[in-house]
Image 1: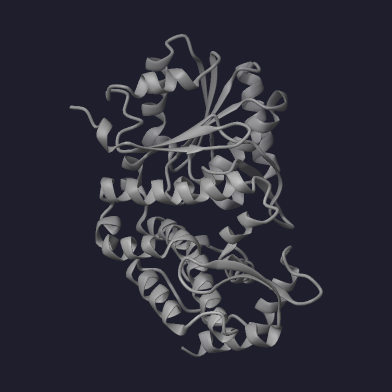
Image 2: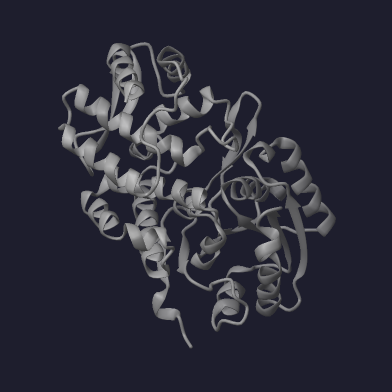
Length: 379
């Protein structure tokens, strides 16, 4: 039986345009059309599958079978890294390059990133650097990587001094997002991805927020059609903004809605997103979006109603909307001063005039930020 009608495709424009294909069963070697789709993408005979210790046992065999069906002569290897943000290091990046060397990968080789954002970032950066740039095929397996890191070609690894400090812009050759992989995603990771989906509605399209409210139950149940729709619309929003601002000089900054607050919370917790009490990235962004909406109200940009509604939607998705206990407002503001987007006149935030209408506001007084943080702690 053909599932072709359930596939969605999003075209990402730019110097190196590519397509994102979204739908269930796209990595299934038995499903018609899947091998042919890959055969069009793979230019050479070498491929390195890069994955992590959580994802490889679930999906690497299936991807390998699909590659062999697409190109029987493929010379394939697999490199599996330990799972977790703390593994996104130069040392692991070096190991990935060693795996390409061991494979004898030539300039027409393909690096295949099978996993979430960490795998996608590290494998993409390795592809950007191997022989000064080879193809990367992104096979995202988390909702966050499908709606965020698969669009825009940003690749990087972390240093002890900060996240994503070493990297390159390297758009993939293609992105194939198999929504079936979301069935094995832990609930907490699914909700973290939904925070970024909500963000696109908050900054670009109030109607999309309406749609998310109406389809919250289906999304939480991982319904393929609802998921594909949410992912495709999110990718369309991001693809549009990336095409207009590929190197993040202006409009693309809107994608940081909720992130200035969110990153401060993450940093203050010491990126302990694996701990039971610490917020992960998506959870921190959810809290950050509520704080950004409330700051917008405090500064007289927007009515309080929008913030309340945003908070209710995030709550519906099981996301936190209040600051975790024990975080000091002064310490969070100190973190925001270090943010690369701050300057001498004050802090810089992406705020909104209401749902679907975000803008960058510079020179925000610290007193206003402190008041919003204090109020969020009292609740």
